[in-house]
Image (cartoon, rainbow, N blue to C red; front, side):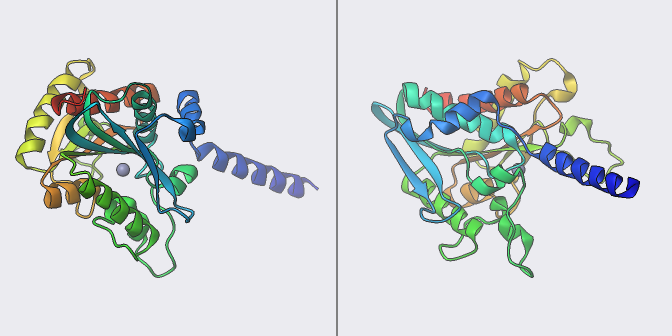
Length: 277
Ligand SMILES: [Zn+2]
């Protein structure tokens, strides 16, 4: 009897702990997500329409022509500040629109990974699991595994709109300035990873100046890192479009509101500099 009871208890604890690892969107993001279909936008279309991976891409056009910038959230489902920020941007530009130019936002790029709070989605047995990691699938393939198809759809969107900046919003475990030199594992939190070309280098300096002026805690300051990892979105955009290309990384060890704020400040610097705000 006791044994049975203990066993039952263990199962309940296990179920509860699994549920606890999921992420619950902030009420603000939840509300935006629920109202995504009724937003006033210049254009909205579905990437990978007709599949379980289907996800919306929003286009917000200004009154005058200008630069185009693409912003991606939810590339990794367990990096919530990225998609929390992207959803807020969708709401914001739905209300006011950019001053000029064009902002393209894919807030939940790997929708199923976001729903499962996971880094990647599963792939068939025997296949490299990184084929389920959207940020290792660029430039993608129109007939590849699902995330290769998603990477292909996103790169098509960037090419068709002739983007001048590609922003991919991510998170890491802890701030990189907390890294122990003895430790092999390196945290990337509070970094801007950029493709080493002229448009990125200029923007990275502006972003660091701006963001670090609002951060008091020294270990929470941002730094820049060159060269996004191969087959990532920023790697592709930098190499193939030669545009400003970034991965923003905030650390999950900080409060969610603070991380969302950092993501939004960095995005704002780029949009202002490109003349969209
Ligand atoms: Zn990531």
